[in-house]
Image (tube, rainbow, N blue to C red; front, side, top):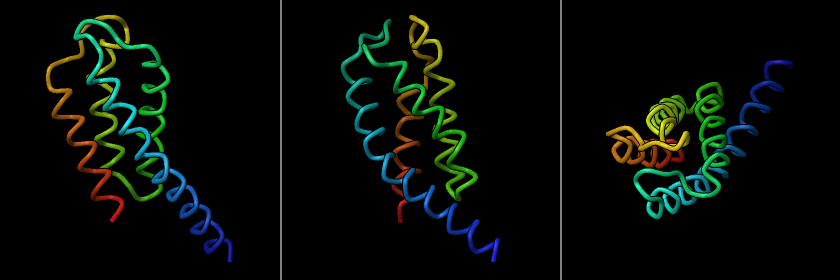
Length: 106
């Protein structure tokens, strides 16, 4: 019985996370497309926090590829958030996150 309740709760969390991923991808896409190479746009910290939350919560609810991809992008964007340029490879990491989200929602 407790196992069923736990599985139900995990399923609910996963569905809620999946529902937020599309917005996060769209918001990141817009922010990354419009930001100057050497500075983070307004609202970047909020996006980074949301990305960080996905990197930590996706794996335990059955989306490990999404969590890994979010973590990879998060690490590459950290210097950008601090006012420097994002590290090389962030575009590929973002594409990887989009692919993981698309695969995870099937």
